[in-house]
Image (tube, rainbow, N blue to C red; front, side):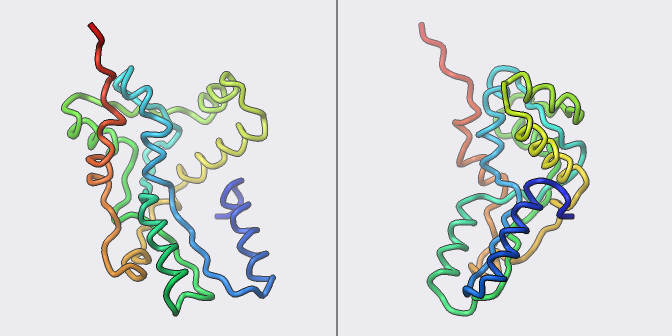
Length: 185
């Protein structure tokens, strides 16, 4: 599970924190909902599609607003020191399901076009990314494709006493990110 770049790096930091003896709470957020507009809104607007190397693997995306709320709660209330929370949204979705939800929200077809690992690497190289970053991001995509991001936890509910933000709500809150630019006349 921790043999891929980002998960391995994060786990090493956790190990160092634990070894330091400093009281801490570890938060492990899953992939962020905000990655969808941040990385894919451009091609959703221009092509009605987004491209990722996610295969058909479900991911329990989390809204960073929930991550922030959990962080604030663990910093300001007792009972969290020494705990590790895996923060996920309330459902695991494939990129194809994300495309369906975007299509429903926007009233137009949005497609998910799956890339192979080689296509992903070529695309990142063509953008001028350094080799270490290309490899790290390709490994991260492989990590999710292998399925460990699908696990939904109750940790957000446990800490906050409410359900995490649903993907549909996140999309409604961010619909403007995916709307084509208005044509100037």
